[in-house]
Image 1 (tube, rainbow, N blue to C red):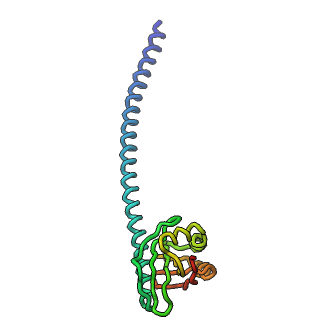
Image 2: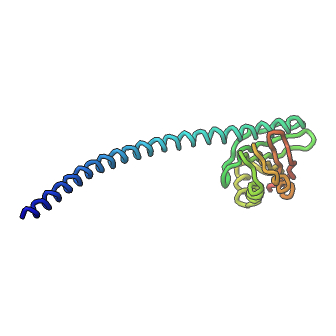
Image 3: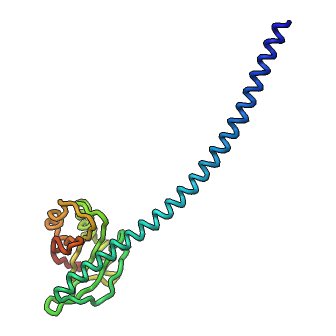
Length: 187
C-alpha cells in the first residue's frame, strides 16, 4: 500500500509539473501568436511601402524615357503635336506622343520603359505591336499612321541591341539612342 501511495504521489508530482509546463507553453504560444500578428502587420506595412516605392521608381523610369525621346527628337528638329501620355493597351505603353518634323511629317512615337531591359522584352514588345487587337485599340485612341517604337532601359543587357535591330525596335538608354527604330504603319 505504501508503494502505491508513493507511486500515486510521484504521478501527482508529474501531473503538477505537466500542468505548469502546459501553462508555460500556453503563455509561450500566446506570446508567439502576438509576435506573428505584429510581424504580419509590419510585413503588410513594408509591402505597402515597397509598392509605393516601386510605383515611384517606375514613374521615374517612365519620366526618363520621356525626356530621352523628346530630347533626342527635338535636337533633330521634331516637335510634339500632342502631349505625351500613357496608353493602356494589353498592358501599357508608357509614352505615346505624336511628333512632327518639317520635312518628314508626323509620326507617333510609342515607348515602353523598363528598369532592366532584356532581349525577351524586345521580342515581347515587337510581338505586342503586331497584335491586331493592340493595333485596333491604338487606332481607337487616335494613334494611327507611321510609328516609331522604342524600348527604354536604365540597365540594358548587351544582347538587346541585336534583337532590336532584327525586329526594328529602337533602343534608348541613359546615353540616348542605341538603336534606331524602323518606321511601321499601324493602318
